[in-house]
Amino acid sequence: MPISSSTDDVYQTELINYLVAIDSSEAMNEALESLLTPAEYQEISKRLQIFNLLRDGVPHRKIAELLGVGIATVSRGSRALGTSHSLLDR
Image (tube, rainbow, N blue to C red; front, side, top):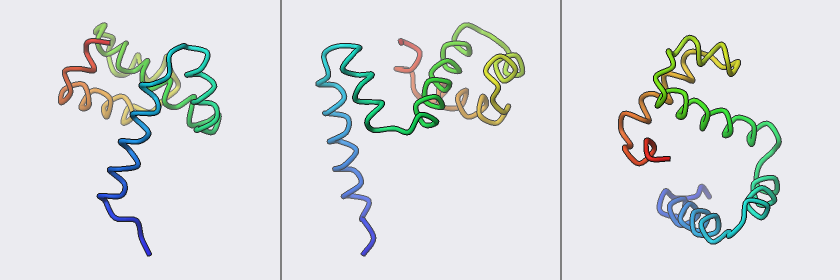
């Protein structure tokens, strides 16, 4: 039986609540290492760097080159920044 989208929403809310309750960078690192594979952790870290570099005005192609990601990944980050103003405040 597939999981419903409302169940997915509950799971995502639980994940968010779990992460925001973490009170130190060491504990956050431990939690992320437990939840994610090393490759997933690296990819999420790169996505954050994409946001930072876009915010700093670095061109898409340069970001792709610096981080070793595809231009489509950078473009996706750019679209996400365009729709979420809170990402700019980080």
